[in-house]
Length: 102
Image (cartoon, rainbow, N blue to C red; front, top):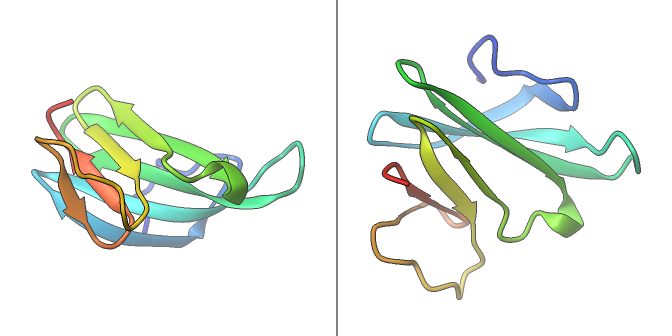
């Protein structure tokens, strides 16, 4: 479940799920509804309690290769199965690569 205080007005914290952890950063996905178009999508939330959090949301059509980064949390990027994983990045699951150093 998404830690308290990381919700926003467009994401559904009840739908959240932890998709991985790496180097002290936890990665969550939540359901999302675009407030302008009403299209569904998802939010990617990065959390490192001692450093902070970062998030990004996109409707499904715009979510491929979405990237989120923040100070203290590093970066995470959505990938598809045939994407090349850049040096310094770690693949977590089927669709997420992370780099706590960027």
